[in-house]
Length: 431
Image: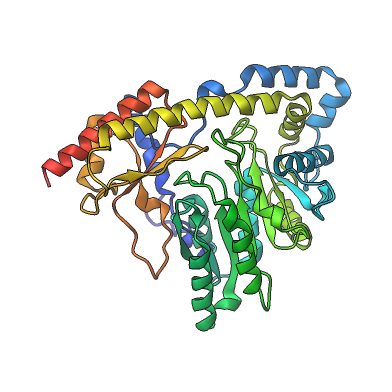
């Protein structure tokens, strides 16, 4: 750019938008291919359904009518037969009586991944200065999006049972007492195998959380966003019913899900079952984005559901991730298990993540001696500080790490945890 060129006058939202810290970690992994990356929350490359997708696409495109329909523009709300199949899929996952919930295919919106719906719902409901409540920690990409929208993100403790209902009620009570309740617009819950902790919201907390939010929805409804991106990657035990199960009138919960984790991130198909009075504003906003998500990808996902290809693929994925999870947990016990009660980690029953807590004296941020030593030892992780929103009432812990077993083979996972153990031992010996 010429030295005398004036800068563009960016919008206030653009100025609030920060680079996601995970981008720098991804760049390091690409630049250092020998480094074992336990950082990226990507899916297992070896399990991507290339042969199945090829067969489905070949059959689709060999049929002239079906091929032309798939290659044509679709609707903004999404392919109707897919929305019908998605409602049936949700009924199956939760074991609903089909008449249990007052939600039809018209209340479903297909999106370019569930991330698009997260953004649109925030954009539709949040003005600068409004409050969104999330877990502590929580999915940092979305909390970063909320901050770009100008939201004040306030956080609720997460323990081994997920978001703590009593803590949510206490926070809403404080906001009410301070006159801020009218600004509370969203409660955001990752309900299964949460990114970053791997923790699932306990079954006996789900209806209680929803009841608390309803009690504080006085002058306006507070929307509960249920992010169920990892729900179908459950490989131990039976997952509890969705929060949406406790919203039979379809008034209070937006249930969001995606095929990115369970089929292929390349197709980038997500969907949301939304309260009916939010469907039109979301579709209008989505029309300004794209006039409709990729139609070919929607037809592909529909065929995968109809033929059973999708269901068989999910079963294979769950077996694969269970093997990787077990390798990581065993390696953590071997290499970090003797460091005392201050060192502990989560035990997920699905998803892609384990959350590690070290003694408070050991900092894990990207400028810390531990992070640098771990890179020297050949392993890359996500500093846990990235996973905590900028809640002005809280201090971010500096001694946590998010570990992902999604990408690496079990042997690489074991080697990566061994390298991390050596790095921790080095820092303890050289304070």
